[in-house]
Image (cartoon, rainbow, N blue to C red; front, side, top):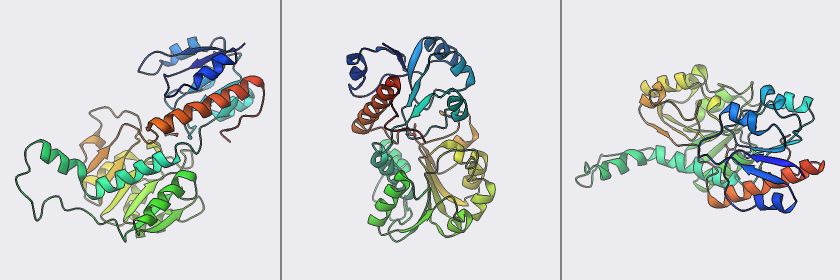
Length: 307
Ligand code: DGY
């Protein structure tokens, strides 16, 4: 039976299904991802590969894996995978849709609320002992109810789930799709939430021009991919005060080096890419990835193909 390499320890027990099916499974034991050379060594005999977004699947990796049949990416996004190169080798690529939609939409909304109401600063003041009394003018933030949100990638699964949450907060939703006028929506929105996939077309879609078009005082939330945003332009927009705040679950690279200029920008909240990080979502992601591997190893169509 086939050799399967799993690039990280995973939540849930679905990997057992691979062993039950007779496959030999190796799980990378480290907390940090395998270095590209370690990954190349690990896949020499592999027919099934489970990757996360930190594993770059490029030509060099595919060349090191002559027997590879199927890649199960532990994510809904697949910008870490060279899809032309996998297609040229007829290697099936699967993803983990739907099961992380609510977790990621919840986190986008948590970031929106945290940035609007300045939760990190307020909580830090309590912990540091700087909070002395009820303050009539301390930590004043932005309203959420009744405000307008532009949801970029608004027709997708996660964008639609964020829209439902926003409607529950009596917000006006502008769903921005591929063919819609992004800048027009940015001019009207008090909040902008990014959910577009990262492609050559969407890379840096939020650049200096887009940020200049944004309504003064707007708040940017990104739970999609860091590459959607030109981070130097974002730092400028925060320093100038044009943007009120930005709350990011994703950056480029991840993690940002501690001396990255973006981290010195004011009113910035950055999380360590935890959009799908609930026990349930992650266990279900494992189950979907295993279903993709089992199908690909059997030569069946993947139940959850990347495209
Ligand atoms: C995804 O699924 O693409 C997330 O970013 C990883 O959970």
